[in-house]
Length: 299
Image 1 (tube, rainbow, N blue to C red):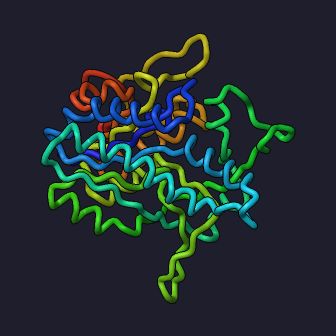
Image 2: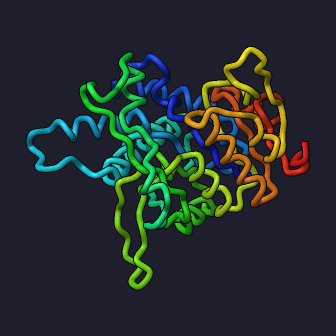
Image 3: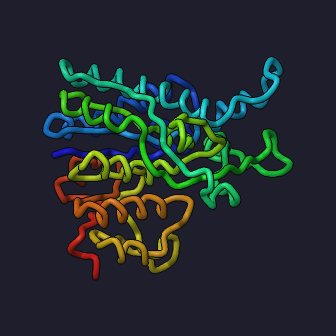
């Protein structure tokens, strides 16, 4: 079975962790421990969040007196793909001797006229501030920065990812939603843009284009909860896309994960699931998490 695994932004930096390299190395090993059993039996493509990491790099870039202007987000996003990808690749190499592991920096195509550019929603640095125990705001240092989050339309390197998979490699790609680019319709030239693409929606598109059998969205909660945060919240063990969208999920946390799962199931007829990282094997085998199935769409 071909599985696309979408790791949450908390995979390498859990709540309360310091954003140190040593901490992220240790957490990368934890991630690989959770995924190793799946990697033995299935084709895996791994994508990941980068919220704390890109926040850290953006803050450092903005404060560096040697720079005339801060590094743009597309460049910083590429840097986080390499950094996080290297940590995961080394841990996977050590856990799965003889299995080829490749980290590929990938670009995600967005439309220049996407409405998101007129309505920025993504907070850069908020995740880092949360991990360090402080909030960002207009009077904070560094100041809060909100950037657009356009919809992913394509993945430039998808043919290369497919070739690597077909050759037996375990592939890490599309981290942080991929490097956002627009495409010149006349020349095909790529131009980086100041934006952050939602990582879960990119994972759904990646799984669709790779004809994956399963989209596995891993986070820090055991499943999706209907009416989350209220007195009558309850776990949702399985659902169709329509039921999942009716679950009143927080737009800045579980909402995008649920939408990604719903899109993949609707467009492909495959299976998706959302659950806790440490239960990855059990989720795929139907013993944990929330399973999203096309035959439950009316449920």
